[in-house]
Image (cartoon, rainbow, N blue to C red; front, side, top):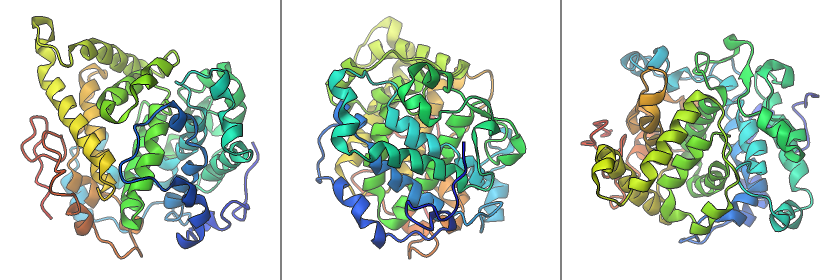
Length: 395
């Protein structure tokens, strides 16, 4: 795969961090949502398309080709050395963002959605240039990183543009792995490179989006991508669908393609999701063991509905809560490794300051921004008295 230069036409200067929110109006105008949007359906999943370029621009602008992101608070880093494998959000390096490439490319392909004759025509209906723009942006997202990633950086085959029209090739790319682990920061010891990179990217972009006032745009652009199967993890996708049922069109469950797994962790998550799903809303002896987790799921559904309706909600809080919910559902089946749940304050103060630098917004204002009516009751990471994690998120 050829490399792109810093001056590639799409949003010239993006690799150097010259992000100008005002100059990006033309890309964001088609994605101005109504205050109370309609539930996510198959059309929105399949047409996510060019909106995802916004996700790339929000984060790449902060990198400046540094070896490590800057301005960390060492005192806070020392306080969270108990995180798994001595890793924390403070250990994120720019190369950990390599899966923004997959948010764009795999997200565009929506691998877990059926492609009937009508849906197969969607990309051409939405925009004749959309596919080329997504491919270009995905390649830029690799070339902008210090490692300047290419296909030969991976021991397992990555998702390449040719996989968009080749289902077999796409499935072969369900678990790419970077050969040189020294290139990575927080993800260096991960067993699931794509999953780790996606979380690192989502947490960082969420903070950047909150600081730029693009939280609603970011949320409503990324959710269809996650629902469409960007993780290429059937278990993760089932759990995600269950957690977001109130904001998803019921028909989308009929439009799911066969789900497959990326690794053993995914298979365990899929089994667990299939076991617990029939018990939600039921009271029976065989479901008794799942009741605490079901209570968490129902609490998160209410929270997801509130965030979906209220465009003012900080999205940093949401992705911390989502991370905790997904992690807690698979912790018992993940090979004995201890998984870490995060408080919002912990994540906010671990992520680097240059994600919000120059925006006029500080961490405390984002921490306090949550609407009092959407406080995340019963949500790990948000509720100070949640059963899995008690958090003091006061500034």
